Length: 305
Image 1: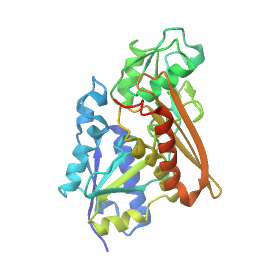
Image 2: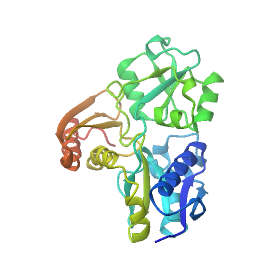
Image 3: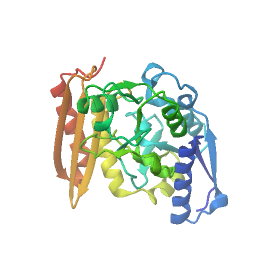
Image 4: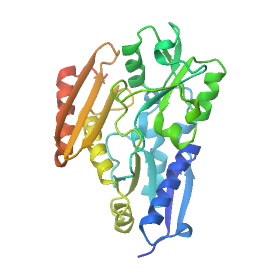
């Protein structure tokens, strides 16, 4: 059955690329054509507030709440999100159980003169808005200073070259999608810097009672990415993770096994708690819950205010 679809997205260059990828996938896998699908730009609070940490003004929901309101009010049919920017708990009446094939989840470093992390001067300033990235970097180089940076990719690179920072850390997925690989100075392995849960994954959200849109999304759901995302996100749910929770989680599928590793830092970053386990793919859900519980016990809840 054909239907007109409106996709809601943040208005940034990167977000609109993700929305277009979603639109193309729907066209490729259903009887809908380009004229049947509209992309609507939605301004979010996260885009408006750029000079403080998200944790100080409402957390990850700042990037998704306005889009979700449009979805709840039936102004759009599908919301497109970067999964890593979504709160751990699903919004009532909505469901985010469709994921497009994962892009590269690794982190990258951009420096002014192509230096790698180990080559930066002592007391060099690295721009990041993430406690996780800050603590991971300081775990490798304790003599490095981290300073808050916000804004889209272009803005952050400009601030770097204007001399406000010696380096910045970004997700590889975003840089690749924007065709800006030439800026990269270093690509970190997922072992060196365990990424944020769901990093590199585009999540598509719809209303729970919208059966027609749900049936469309089922046709483009990437099974392996769904399993990896489920395991990683379940750790967040157990830990009740938010913007202040410095946690990395990464799942890998090999044959019929899923390998999940995660690290959690104490509030001040002085303690690191790590766990890695393997199970059958069909137990991805339980594996995420198990690792979340183990990290919670190891940390003695010393990761939340």
